[in-house]
Length: 274
Image 1: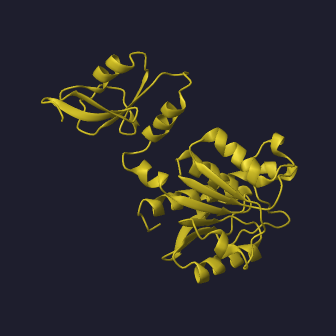
Image 2: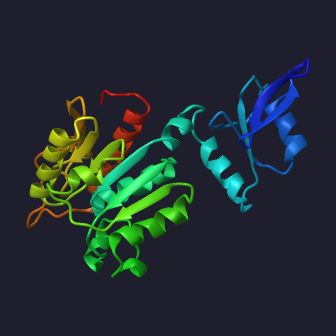
């Protein structure tokens, strides 16, 4: 039973009882006096604030390597309360781990997505490094394994499953049966169309976020997210395909990929409009 004059708050994601007039700095001085970063409900505070029931307070000392439990608490802390729980329970499949897919995977791992299913059959080549989230040490590795290595180093609390297969109409539905949202991240227009059409016809309960028209160094603002139908979103300018003199380059690919990642996040949080 809660004591009279006490409130419940979460300190580094652990439930605690504090005095009902306690401030963030009071708790810091009591629990982790050397903390020089104080995060209250997802925001770093520069001035002391009185705590309220169910507030979430995170205390960080710069440069200190946290324990595994502390690390997850610190990652959670940067999200608005209530957001992390929904993100942590979501599962996303990514078809293709090139420029789009590798960037989407990294962004989703950083926000703490619960489960990622990574699907690709290719290996990392030197030419991939101009726009894909790999390092020289990954050259020659299968992209699925290279990406799993990267994501584990970024956020070890994401469940990462890999499938090293070539996707076509015969295996798409089975492959993505157990995920909530599918990200289309192919370079080839035919593969893009095949994936989207198969998902829409055979997995109508899934949402797919695709991309088309992201090549070159054209205006940032021409890349847009469009809702085509209730379970189909399309990112890009629908024009700028890769061709001689108009290659795929890191900045514009990353813009489109993060349109896709943010669309996934919005869908998870119930924001269905673009």
